[in-house]
Length: 165
Image (cartoon, rainbow, N blue to C red; front, side, top):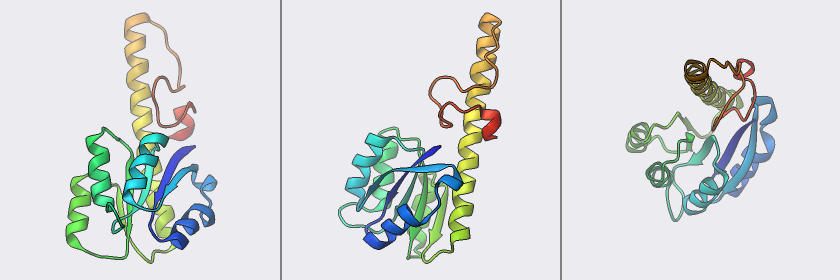
């Protein structure tokens, strides 16, 4: 399962995202939630999710500032930004920070599912590349072939990457 954190200041929206979306069907599990960017920093650094759904405009620390600080801390999570504002500056900043997607509220379930699917696919491809590289290196050094099981730090959490690809 892919680990997810939801950062959203509107309590009803956050609860809807956490409880109403069938995350298991998307091969995801919610491992944390936060009501603002400051809380988001703490939760994300503690939970080490694979990806984060975050609002942009929030009290204390906005989503862009949160992502900027997380990137400075070495966070490699994928981000999907949810916002009610079609502000070009936010979108431009998000792109510079490597955000995976940008959804305008209100969005349809299919839009969220598609964005999460794209992030999931990117994570699995990255996992497969790491596994292939590790397996090739091990094979070259020792002649041993561990097969398709993930080794070391990975994003597919020990599943055979051939199952995830």
